[in-house]
Length: 182
Image (cartoon, rainbow, N blue to C red; front, side, top):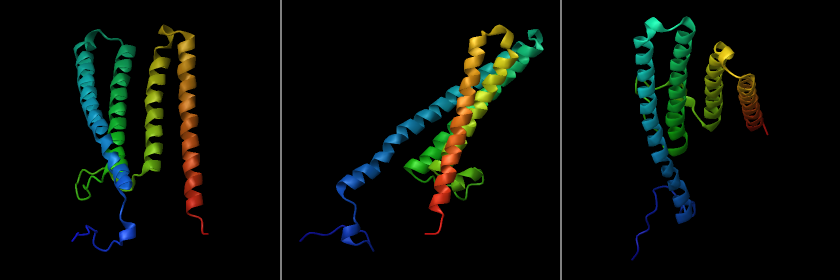
């Protein structure tokens, strides 16, 4: 006599096939990637502290422009770390498994309504912000850089802006199509 291991309330035709279960399980292959991003966060924390130490220890011999560039470098590290948090937390929550931290007082507000679409827009905005910091550093230090470097950075920044606008527009179209009465 065989015992059917059927989930309660699920008809036999609704049970997942072994292939379906394997495909669904494969999302866990992303776990090492997200854990690796946590290690990268540690690298950026170290980089931030080292840059802060350098700024504080050399403050008396630095010009205002050098201080400004060092501060922008610190802001750049912070923004990349924020991007890593969004990718790690949002990606894990969206593609792997729920974090189950709904009652935690430190839960980020955006995590309540994160999905692949929201994550794409947030990531594109973070990339634009990081690019903006780099572009500001370039403009402050423009006299030390070749003109073609400045032009390429500006073109890349504009490409990021256009890409973000295209992503946001596409998401708007998909959202409005999905929510129209049929």
